[in-house]
Image (cartoon, rainbow, N blue to C red; front, side, top):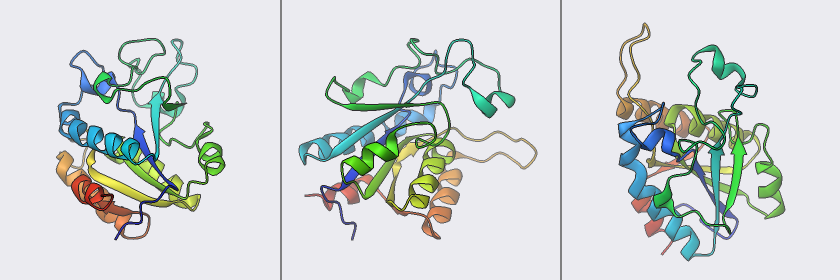
Length: 201
């Protein structure tokens, strides 16, 4: 049983046009598979008066804050002010929503996320968004290391099928299985969106 209380926050990580729209440099067809579950989680958390935090990945136009990610791909992504960097419109972010901006994989690095959670008395985070084995996984590890009870809504995270970089192609479902098993082995609980929402009724 997952204890979802007023001290639980939903993190919606990098649900941005860059992944969801075909013009995006990081367009990921799989992203659409988690869109409905993201909406369900956001709506349920707001309905219950619980904290929802949108994480938005942003880079400066000159690339000066890209960091080590730029070592692997110099394609401009998540550029401040670009349409690709905008949070997906269907998630209905409004002026009252908390949006935290980052430029690293983890939502905690170089942001005020930890301070914000501490100020609100949050002790549990539910992780959703993109990408499964990058920003979501990195954030889950950091959350656990900071002693937050960490829950990953496994069907509300997505990412691309991984290409063969010398170790074979890896379909996203296989990536998710490995990530889920890794987290369950000592980092976080893993749950399906429907089960999580049912436990909030």
